[in-house]
Structure formats: C-alpha cells, structure tokens
Image (cartoon, rainbow, N blue to C red; front, side, top):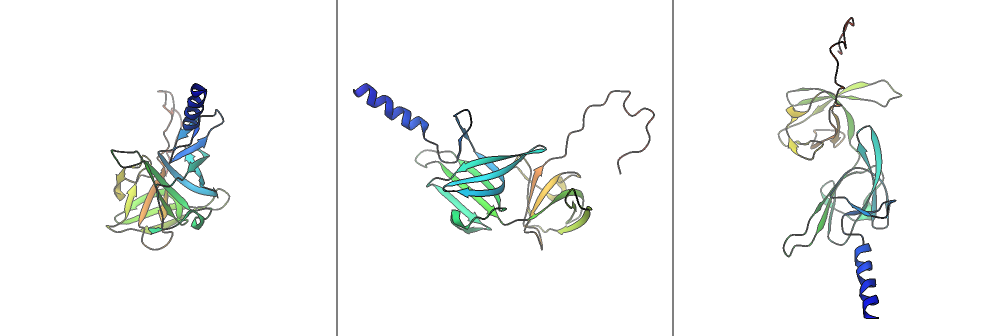
Length: 205
C-alpha cells in the first residue's frame, strides 16, 4: 500500500508543469521555455500564448506563468489581465540558484513598428515597412545614446550592428526609439557553384 502511494506521489510531481515552461506538447512532454520572444495571441488563465517567429515560419508557444513572476508592461508592473493581444512579449526564465527560487521575468511592450533594415545613417535607422499586399515605403527612425539594441540571439548590440535585410521591431512605434529587437537576422544565401552567375548580368540594388 505504501509503495503504491509513493509511486502515485512521484508521478504527480513529475507531471506538474514547472514555472516558466510551456504546457505539454503533443508528445506529452513539457518543453522548457527558458526564453520566449514574440507577439501575444491570447491569455488563457495563467498561460500566455505567444506567436514566435522561427525562420520564415511562426509558431504558437504556451508560456505558463506561476507565482514567482515579474510582469511589466512598458516598464510598469501589471497583471496578466492587463495584457492585450498584439502586445510584444520578451520572457526569460531564471533558473533557481541557492535559496533563490526559479522565477519568470516577462517584459511586455505595446505594439511597435516592424520593418526591414535598409541602412543606418549615424543615429538614424532607415526601415522598409509595408505588408506584402501593399507598397513598401521607407521610414526614418530616430535613436539616441539611450536606445537599446538586442540581436536575435538576445545579445546586446549597437545601432551600427544592424545590417540590411534584418527584420526588426521598434518600441515605441513613434518618437525616439527606446528599444530595437532583431526578430530575424539576415537570411543566409545558398552556396553557389562556380557556374552560378555565368552569363547573367545585374546585381541586387
């Protein structure tokens, strides 16, 4: 009897979803979500459903929010109910260390400006914006020495590190940029054989 009770307790503990992990996948295993960055789709109870860009495809990721969470919207403490679809989510799960329990830090920002980098001119960032079904246009984004830039691998960077064809999100959408996130780096080009390009004229503008 004691052996059966102990087994049941162990199964219950192993089946629980840990703080900052996504909900069980189709295979039944809970996949950790140590870092999630994307657009909020909806809030389901204590779970954030976030659309994350992975290469040329987008995927919905479920992020479970437990008790040890720091949640901010535009720098101010908020509750889950204050988050609206379309909000940009940047979440990081900090592992437990010593007596410090595991915690989740969620930084949310209202919709910003998205576009593709054209070039950098001093403190000005030139973006190409516009949906696929509408004409593209160039937008000038002003920055200053307080503007923070973060690459797709979450590392801090400088404005000069932004390269043409990078996909970025700017916050706030108007005025001087406070934060610039690279959501997709420069697409890699396929390797070319020696014969590629022979007999062809013209280069990409």
